[in-house]
Image: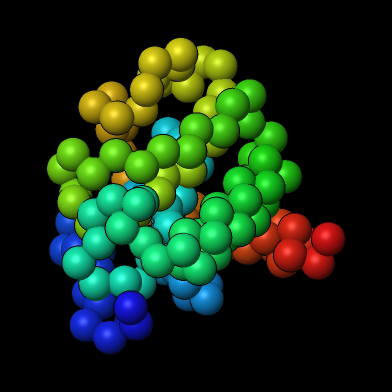
Length: 142
């Protein structure tokens, strides 16, 4: 299935900052000050579940997820890196990557449903994006 007809869910558009276009996925930064939180959104229309991806796309998403996870570990040095596919609110297939630290507002529980202190300023978003993309380039080179 091609990317033809793909549209980003309006809630994801509203709640995230654009980061990059990778071979399969749009990389987005969640507009949440408390966590370094990125998502991958495969550019395939109408998909809601991981097992709906074509085999080659599933393998590519796994590779992109690994690159993003390695970059986030390098950039943010988290105590834990949560990677999850939920889809309870936004059905469009997307994969969350959240850097967690002891003492963050939701620690040790999940970030989903935790109150949001505030969104990111443009400078804060740009700094997080710069850090993770710089590390992603390094991760791809390894």
